[in-house]
Each structure stands twice: as C-alpha cells, then as structure tokens.
Image 1 (cartoon, rainbow, N blue to C red):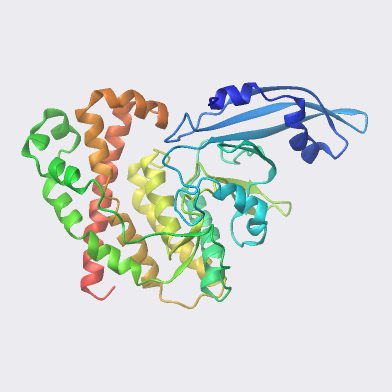
Image 2 (tube, rainbow, N blue to C red; image 1 turned 90 degrees about the horizontal axis):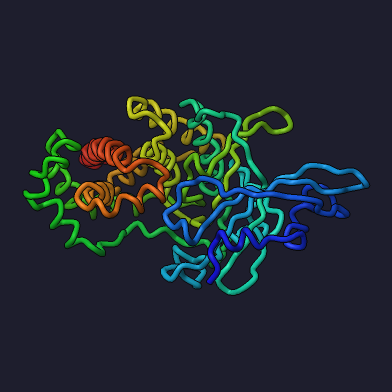
Length: 384
C-alpha cells in the first residue's frame, strides 16, 4: 500500500483538474503547482494526511493563483465498512456526496471540490483551503459563538425537524465500553504507580481514590446521559476542525471540517469536545478553563433557544458535565507516557508537541475532569 506521502507526490495535472476547475472555472487548466504536508494532530499519521497544494491555473486566457487542501485517507484495519459503525471509514465521503451537509443549520461545512477513490482502500478529498481569521488562537468569546452555532445545528432537530433515517449516521453509544477495564484498574489501583517519583511530580495532589470513584460511577453517568434527548452532532468539534471566517455579510461563521464521526448523539455532546479537546490540545490556558466552559455552555444554550428549543437547560448542563466525567482514559494515557518512555516519540509525532508538555497539560486536564465528576454527582443527587 502506498503511503499518504507517496500519494501526494504522485498528484498530476489530471488529478488536480477537478479542484482547479471548481476554483477557477470549468474551462481552467493547471499550469503549475507545489505542495507541503500540513502539521495537524492526528492519531494515525500514516493513514491520514493533509497536504496544501497551491499553484497557478489558466482560465479565460488569464493566469490565476489557486490553493486547495488534499486530505488522504488510507483505510486502517480497525476501521469498518459497515455504515452504522462508529468507525465507518467512508462516512465523510458519503456525507459530502449525499448533499446532507448542504442543508444543516449552524455550522458551515468546508467546501469539498471533489472526491476520488482510486482503489478500495484510499479516499482523496479536495477541500477548500481555509484560513482562520484569528492567527494566534481564538479568544474565549469566539468559543462561545462556535458553541452557539453547534446549538443551531443540534437545536434545529430538537425543535422539531426530523433527523433523516440515514444508515451512515451512527448513533453514539453512551453505554460505553469496559474493554481494557482490568488493565485500567490495575494501573490506577497499584500503589507502585503513585509512588513513582515522576508520577508524584505530575500529580502533586492525591488522585488515585478519586479516579477509582470516577471509574465506579461510570454506569451512573452513562445512565443519566442515556435519558437525555438526542440530536445531530459533529462529534469532533474542536478548533483543529473549526475555523472562524467572515461571511459575505461580515458576520462570523464557523466552518467545520472532518465529518468522519458525524451522527446522532445526546444533547450537549458536541460542546464536550469543544471544551475538553481544546484544553487537552493546549489551545486554551488552564487558567481560562472555567471561563471557556461558561462561555461554551451559555453559547450552546442560546443557540438551542435561537432554533426554538423549549427544553430544560439543566439537561444541557447535566449532559455536558456527565460526559466530561466519562473521560476515563485520560489519566491511564498520561501514565503510559510517564512510565513507558518508548511511547513518547509516537505521541510527539501524533500530537506535534513535546511529550513533557503533553504530560503536564493532560495531568491538569485530569483534575478538571475529576472536578466535573464531583459536580455531576451533586447534580444527580439533586435530581439533575
């Protein structure tokens, strides 16, 4: 199987033609181009790659510049060919090809110029080359606006529009999976783990007992979420996948990429990603975590209301808080990096950050998550 780099290097004028013509006009021809691999966080860098192509084309006798992003997806052995499965590997292609993304509220889907499938294990997406209007990261209030747009998308269906019966829209399984539970319990219950000097340095406040309580209460959190209304969700909404851009009328729109996990999920599911993933990816300082959370919750609820949703906002707050409390794998992943140094190079390649920086931030996020677990218990004790 070719690598993602090999595929990008093999792009020729014929392969580029659909994208160039979509950008410059139906009679455009490709004159010249170059490309570079884009630096993005991805768990499978050998199976997903983004490449920015730019160059010049000729349209109406005039040489004009163009740029586009090539997303290369090589099927991984753990991905599925079944449309209803979470890891259905062709979902994003189907979402674009079906036209469904053209008719949702709130988020603006990235423009897809063309999709190629040269064989049964490769997908090529030619996408709009996006530039975020905030070169140095979003201010907190912009997260609130993105949450409002997510509320528009979900609120449209909560307020009455029926979610179409499409087999490729998977239903997010809130029952969770306890696969690997024994290994997790052994790790967090082992006194030797917490006596390790590097672990004690990273987690200066006692954490083992709180982790065990979080694990034991997982079924309670899952049951609470399972009782909530469900709606359409992007399911990976964080700022690597969201771009702030000015529309033609100068209003801010939130353009979304990576629709691979799109499906049906409990209310507030999307804003969980917007908060926790943004913190975990070091996109927001931990000292701003509470302000981020407040802006996102208020924005999402406002977006639901904008679409006519008349439900109880306590459902949103409970759904968000319980979903954050179910972030059960964060500490085991961090411990893995601390105690198994051979894993650090892989993590640095995937996350494009030094391992020590990841460890420090993930430990801070763990305390944030445990505080939300405490809050979820309080909410459930008082009837939500």
